[in-house]
Image (cartoon, rainbow, N blue to C red; front, side, top):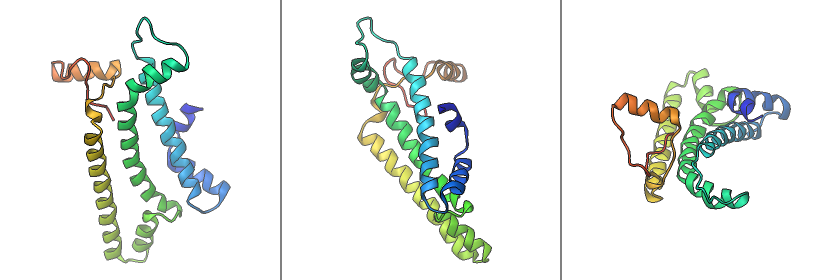
Length: 178
């Protein structure tokens, strides 16, 4: 189920839910939640599968709460902040489906040939996106997410060492991949 939800575009999910539930913001919210939650779940699941466990690692819930969660915390926050930025941009595009987001008003202004209004709204979307990005960067810096240990996948690690020709990070601390 996770593969189906994360591989189906959120626009298609929103359209299907729009047909089932009627015109409102709820189908868009559910589609974005399902799609992005599945992506983050998949990526964190891959990271958790590749964790090197200690020989005396706890079992069950203790393994999850005391080893897996603290190890993946930085990567989780990096993924969530990145997906938040994407959700903001994707929700603006949902206006094409008739959902009253900022994209709906941009589409209406273009169809009525009010190009000045459409341009102002597009600049508003860009400013909003840049401000969310700046907030995300400041929050990551304040929470020291870059300094938390994260684990890269083996393929990405091999690609980055091949492309740069050298190892570019410390053994414990690596930049999160988003």
